[in-house]
Length: 91
Image (cartoon, rainbow, N blue to C red; front, side, top):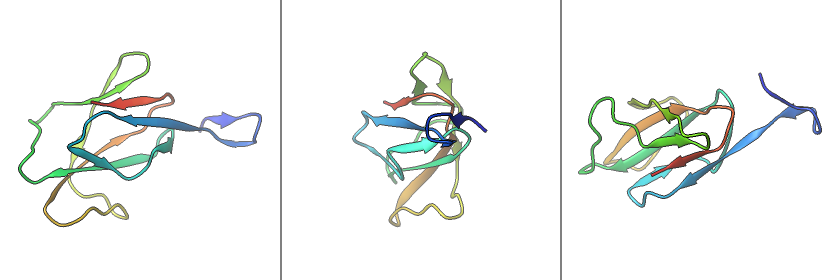
């Protein structure tokens, strides 16, 4: 758990989306939180491909499949990643 010492709670990090083909379920997330993403059914990513990059330049691995509690409209492919303790960019 990463604490925000000024507020006494867990800090949320920003998710900047620069990819018009990807929808995600939140603009902010806590470190360790699962962030769900959805794409048009015709737009697929190859296994092992990642398009989530941290502010420090690290590529974040992502998984494919539905995550309980995160929904997108039917006809979308579902992806997810675990939020690191820094801001990320989806490109």
